Length: 119
Image (spheres, rainbow, N blue to C red):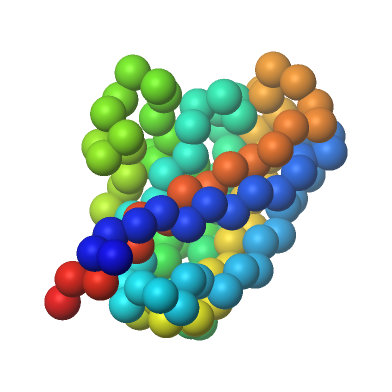
């Protein structure tokens, strides 16, 4: 496959908690090139840490709203792009501080990663 999506899901039990995610990237793809989340998680979420294979992705305090979108945005336009990072089973580590504004708790946080085999 040329391009794909990896979905990471994590339950957020209550407002204001920090969610820690550590997942292996799909071995069937060479690169990860973007990240997205839907807007149904509320606002004011902040990345406290983000890295792929130990290399920082975004700085501490980066607002998740930069990669949030809604269903009115075409699926291929929802991702915040970044320079290609090696996927091939490397780990992505995210720490996301919940903003306390989700419509309901608990909820499932869904992070979408855009994957590619293009060089």
